Amino acid sequence: MNIRSFYLALIVFLSLALLYEWNSEQKTKSIKQHLDMVGSSIYGDDGRFVSIENDELSLIVSISNGSIVEARLKKYPVENVSGSMGFRVFGSSESSAFQYYFKSGFTGITPVYEVSERGDDFVILLDPELGVSKEISFSDASYEVSVYDSTASGVSGKSFAGLYRSEGRALDLKRGALEGGMMNNSSYEGVAISTELDPYSTSRLRSVDEPLEVLSKSGWVAFVQKYFFAAIIGSDEYIYNYYVLPKESGFYRMGYTVEGSSTSNLVYGHEHRLFIGPKIRKDLVERADNLELAIDMGWFWFLAQPMVFVMDFINGYVNSWGLTIIIFTILIKLLFWPVTAKSFKSMAALRKITPELNEIKERYKNDRQTAGTETMRLMKKNGANPLGGCLPLFIQMPFFIGFFFALREMVELRFSPLVFWTDLSAPDPYFVLPAAFGLLMLLTQRLNPQPAGMDPTQAQVMKYMPVMFSVFFLFFPAALCLYTVVNTGVQLAQQTYLYKQHGALGSGHGPGAF
Image (cartoon, rainbow, N blue to C red):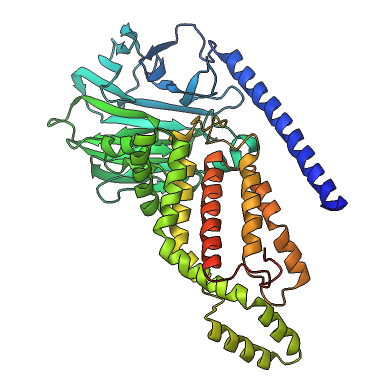
């Protein structure tokens, strides 16, 4: 190692050490700030709110209007430490005007409730003047809330349920660059509706500039965000008018009105089914038709969804999402081995004749036509095809992209450990995986044939590509880095094996030879 390389390595090491120290300090500060808030609430203790909870959910209800103004997932803490509060789906931000809540009732009337009866896991609110009541309780299904609006005398309005949300990002989701912010901020956020006509229709809030209404039996409406979300789910017994309304008084509104819920002109009651929970595919599939599509997995969702199904199956045996990712990545590489082999055979042949290609380019540097003719003749003679190494890779790309998005959106990876990594959904705090990826890229680069007569500047750029990618991977979740490291490592092993088989690893095969 020359002195220049030594100093460069020292600078990189010291930079990573400083970055690690800064990240540790920021994480400690964030945890302390959160734990200092435990036990406190912005909703106060003045009798205007009531709280109910079960083993999974903790809700705060505004007594006067019956809105669910806060919902925390008790089994999914904000911080991966003892004593942390649960992740909020509904709630308000202490540092901004952000609000997100659920409200239901009957159109045309505005009850003012008071507590009629309550327990640890339910509350009954009553407006004695209008004779309207609301019972909020937990259903037998996990992460579901039952909201039953009723009146003994009947009302002329329609039953409705809605989600009300101001502009802003999901509460409690990490936004720091070294906390997964790059991936978290790029995840889809917007309203989604599923009906008989369209199983999954989405729109970002900023695109909602006019009312949208769809009549459908069953279906659901939700605000989709990363990891956790809320959905109002219809039943097969009624026709619903699902709606999304433009911003008004600072809030976007999405929900439904129940059409024809009574045989008379009066409506006596309706039970609303509200899901507030994690985006776990196998759970959402059983809960409602097409609800699993709320896990936004990009353009290749039709490939990503089956991949998650297979990973669920593997994890059922190994009980470790880290090991599951490793096993599944290896299985994908083995599945595509026939395609990969063709690619590497073509690259091996090209690598073997690289010195001869360089010689042709130098000999006929003033005669491009002859140089091209001789180059094609040599390639044809040795079975080398410059596109042969690319085309098979394009076949695999949709699968690898689908897997990438599947890992990015899986809530199961949140706080999931592997060896000394405690959270596969966050970037590697020790920078081991980005460094491993850079090393594997460097080794792969040395195997790949360098194009004949490559421009020196272009060659220098290619030389530092592993470093550039490693820096980029500092901000990727550890699960994605793990997948990429395993994928690149297996591919390197396969490529080395085939190069040996075809005699392309000798010392005379170009500047990148071992």
